[in-house]
Length: 166
Image 1 (cartoon, helix red, strand yellow):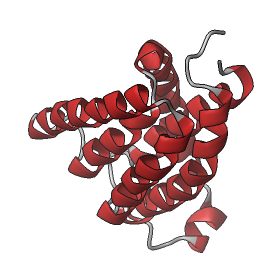
Image 2: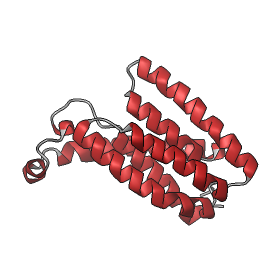
Image 3: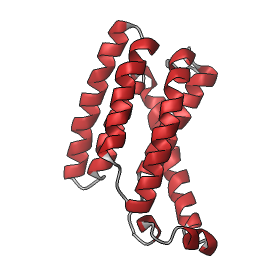
């Protein structure tokens, strides 16, 4: 497997990604909302960590990933294809991804949509789990907390970078 994310960058990014992803997954499953603060933490994290993880030209170029995915995300939100929180969070993740890894990330994302959706639908049918988290909106809503799949994609990509990175 060829991956353009370096092991060094993956190692720097992964702790932040784990913390923010846990926060986002919990929030999206419990409230069906991704906090703007989580998006800001991720962007600030990239602003700091990216400076040390990447060479200057790559670091600066990666900010365009944020802008592009934000525009695409808002267009998809306007077409009711995904939530605004999902769009903003995906845009915040975009700078962490090497452009050469786009196909890999989209492939991981496709798998994580299937895995996340299936896992979520199975887990919400487990009565003891629902009783432990009765206030979670995602258990009873028809729509799916896409933040779960977005986070799983992000984390899987970084782990792949840690293992197979340049």
